[in-house]
Length: 155
Image 1 (cartoon, rainbow, N blue to C red):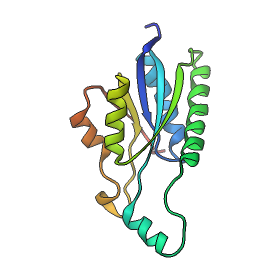
Image 2 (image 1 turned 90 degrees about the horizontal axis):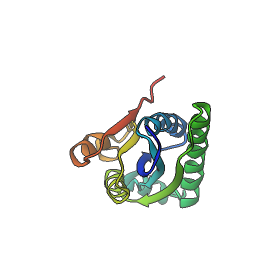
Image 3 (image 1 turned 120 degrees about the vertical axis):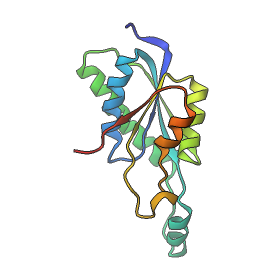
């Protein structure tokens, strides 16, 4: 299938430890969907309880957009390398940083971009449980009309 500039894949990049894994999966999904563009998305998701505890002790709280851009640049490097390794054309790659609930941001960007799919990692359990680490995939599966592809984060 020839690559189409109008076919967009959204890739939700969560953190530095999983970004390369998700990006490599995204390259394979993007290739199979003939995506001509990829939006690498990171959501600055403030954790109110843990953030409040850290702020009370004088520690800086939350990610900055600068850190998010470094994360997305790392994911982009892995994505580009995988396309080159597969000897496939590299699609147009854009970065988006949003704030708020992860599922809401993914939902919004996917709709806005008219995405043909979403790639994300299977989020790991969080010490504070479902309150701070909700099942984003389960929520999105009920809301999105495009397929969701999960990158396996297990060795």
